Length: 119
Image (cartoon, rainbow, N blue to C red; front, side, top):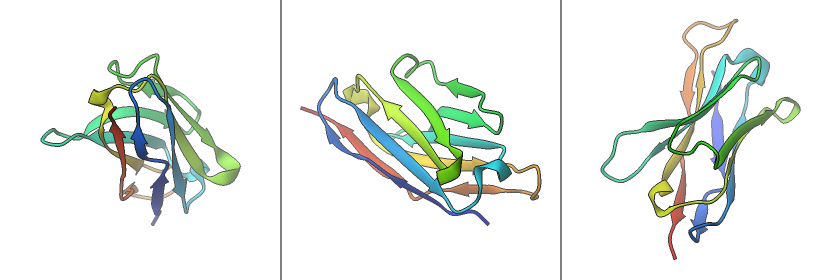
């Protein structure tokens, strides 16, 4: 199975930027969809953005125009570039691998990385 390790979280002021990374132990060519989710205190986990095997991207309305998802296949890494951060973006951000054209029932989550937006 695949293991995912997120990094790049931290404390940032409103209006600032962060780039999150998600390193996969499995080639991204074997994973249908890579996604970023987030969970704020007291709230349900929500989808932030995802990117498919053929590089189609989808971004939640709440972050559209501010966040960008991308991937670097040689490094098996997915990124979430977050700009113009707001206090409401504060959450634990999780990476998820979902589905495979080659493996049955592929699903994996990373351990999460905390993003805090505060002055």
